[in-house]
Length: 304
Length: 322
Image (cartoon, rainbow over all chains, first blue to last red; front, side, top):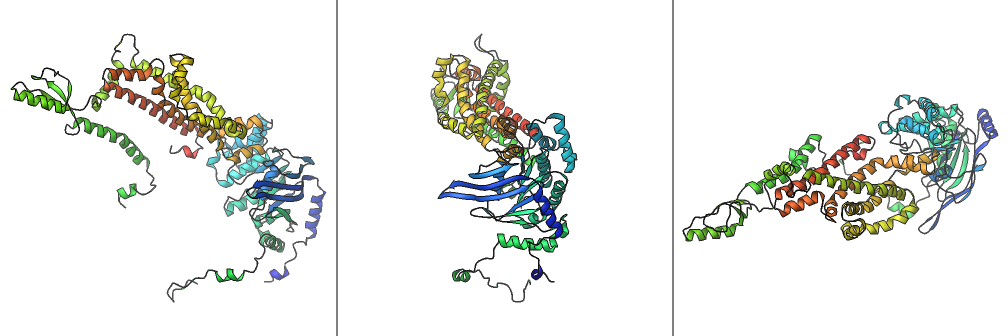
C-alpha cells in the first residue's frame, strides 16, 4: 500500500522512545572509547584496521556494532575484551583504562568456546573459581544460571552432547555468572539456524531486561541489530571508522510484530543505505561482458 | 553394485565386522605366505635335510646341505655303487617352519639357559621392559613439560626448538661409546640411548600439539579472568590431554624401536642378549619367537593404550578411528 513514500525518517522518535533515551543518557558511562586506532603491519605497509573510534556506552544499554565484512567489528570487540592491543587511543571501563583481558569484560564467541573436558556445570563454575569465589558458592551460582538459561537438566552433560543453541546458552551463562561490567558478544548467533537464532534473540533480551548487564553485540545481520539494540554503531571498512551512531526508534518491548513496523523499516532502509550503497554506473566495457543466456530448451517447455 | 566394487569405492567406509575380518586377514596373509614357503616342497626349499647319509662320509643325520651338493654326492654314490644318501627338501636354517616357531614360544620359556648363571627368557624380557620403561619415563619427565611450555610461549619455543630440531638429526646409537664412558657398562647407557632417541622428538611433537589447541578456548578462559600459570594448568593441559595421550602412545612405539640398539651398548642384556645367543647356537626358531614377542608386547601395549584413550576422553572425536 502506502509503503516506501510515507516512511518516517529514522531520526523521528515517539515521545516514549525519546524519554527512554533521555533516561539512558542519565545513567553512568560504563565503557568509553576515545580515539581508538589499531594498525598492524602487512605486506606493502601498515594496514589501518580501526581509525579514530569514539563512542560511549551507558549502563544497561544494548549496543550493536554493525558493518560490512572486513570493517573491523571483530577487531574492535577483541580490543575491548583485551585479547588484542590497540595502537593508540583509550578504552576506559568505569573511567579506568583497561589492561589486557579480565573478568570485568565477559565475552561470548561465535564458535565453540566451551571447555570440552568439563561438564556444563563445571564450565559455568570456571569463571568464579578463577576469581576466588570457589566451592559451594560457585556451584550454587552455576546451578542458578543454568536454571535461568533453561539447562538445569544438562548440568552434568558434556558440551559435545549439546546442540549449537544450547552451547551458546551455556556460554552466555558462563560469562554472566562471573558478574562482568559489560558483556561483549562477537556474532554469537551467527552459526545457528534461523529458528534457533530467533529464540536466542528473545532469550537474550529476556536476560538483559532482568539483570543489570550492559551488552555490546557484534553482528552483520541488519534485522538482528535493529531488533536487539538501543543504539547501533555503524562501521565502514578500509579503514574501520564510525560511519554513524543510530538511535533505534522502534519502541520497546519488541516482538515479532516489530519487524514490520514503520520505524523498523525506515531504520533498516537507512542501514542498507549505509552498508550497501547503490552501485556505481557500470562502465561501457562491463556492460558488454554481462552474462546472457541462450535458450537451449524446446520452445514449448517453459518453467515460468 | 557388486560387493567387490563396493569395497573398492574410493574412500569407502567399512563396518565393524568388515574391519575385524580384514584386520585379521592382515595377519593371516603373511602367515599364509610363510606356511606356503615352509610346507610345500616344490616352492623354494634350496637345501636338503639329510636323513640317511648312505655312503657319503661327511654327511650326518640332520645336516642341511645345498641341493646341488646333495645331487652331486647322490650321483657319485650311484656311480660308485655305494649306498645312496636320502634326504628331504628343506628350507635354510634361518627360515624355520611356523609350527617350530610356535613351539619355541613355549619351549623358550621352559628351557634352562645354556650357561648356568645366565638369565632365563622371562628375566631377559623383564629386563628389557624395565629399560624401555625408565627410558621413556625419564624422557617424558623432561620432554613433556618442555614441549608444553615451548608450545604455549612463543619466546621459549623459539629459544628451544631450533637447537632441538638440530639435535634430533644426531643418531642416538652414535652416542653409545660416550654413554658408556659417562654411565658405565650396565643399564645406564642403555637407558640413556632410549632417552636420547625419544626426548628430542618428544619436545617437538608435544610443542606442536600444544600449539594446535583451539585459540578460542584459550581466549574464553582469558575473558573469564584466568591469568598466568592457571592458564597453563587449568586450560592448556586439560585441553591437549587427549592429543598428548595419543602422542605419548606413538612416541612409546618409537622408543621400542631403539630397544635393540640400546641393549647392544655396554654389556649385552635383555631380549637382545637372548636373540644374539640363540642366533649363535643357530636356534633360529627361538630368534623368531623372541622377535615376535617384542612385537606382540609393543603392539599389544599400543592397542590397550588406544582403547584406554577412547575411554578416558569421550569428547575427542579424533580418537575415534586411530
